[in-house]
Image (cartoon, rainbow, N blue to C red; front, side):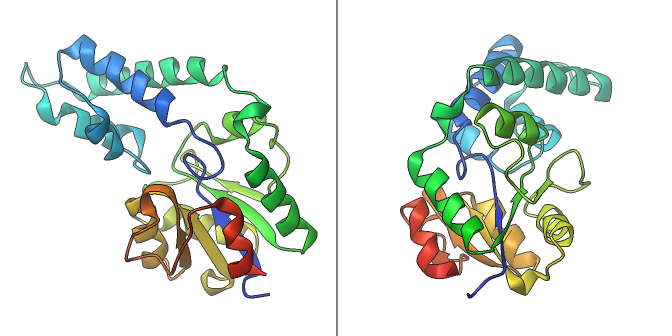
Length: 213
């Protein structure tokens, strides 16, 4: 076996919540009179909530916001997002993902989540994976979001493995950069399927089995 552990990003890898993020940020941007589209939304992937807000506010042309006002806006965004997550259920977990995770577990691979999201546990619970992973490292436990490697280093620590014993699965450039910075090998999929920084590239989730086992 090439790797003893696998650390998965959540959004865009295990399941897809991008549309919920987009709608929540769009609602806030519209309220503030800021232009917001999917291209800007893509820049927010793997980035913390407050750093995402700063990206959204790049086009804000009114009176500068105070730190408290920014906190209030970010909180409001999260409440909109969390409410939309309640629409999620086990149908948001694809058969390909479920079967791959099961195969990895049956082969003794340690499995962890490394996500900048502060709602990781809620999302996993909604899709039926609440107690599945050996460890979860998320936005509630870190000081630095991707491309800083903190979340992956914490995940590796939680499953008692060194970075070179783990493989990081990511769909965002910031995540690939974080893996590289933490001295992890990485798999790029989705939007990161062609990222030159990734060690491996896949187009289908289950393709990682040939890399790991």
